[in-house]
Image 1 (cartoon, one colour):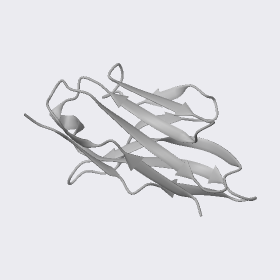
Image 2 (cartoon, helix red, strand yellow):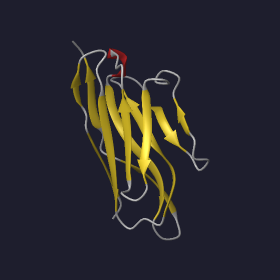
Image 3 (cartoon, helix red, strand yellow):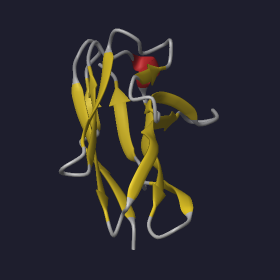
Image 4 (cartoon, one colour):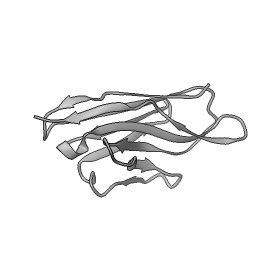
Length: 119
């Protein structure tokens, strides 16, 4: 059974940093798009950063220059380094991936990790 498990969220002051990690487990043959999304209270879920099949990550304009997405294919992990955090970054952050375990592609979500930026 494929699982995505996020970790690393918490409470941080404005200007601080956090590093989120997503561990992908299960019998996985291939990974396509994989990235981070977030959802603030009362808001729609939005893309934060994403690796597509092209390999170059895409970032939301609101996080460019502050957030960095990285992946370790050998360990099946996906990280999000978040620097210069702002109160508006407060949200539940989700890992998402298109994975093939067999012959069919499925889209998977993690359970989410809370990030709160507040003084």
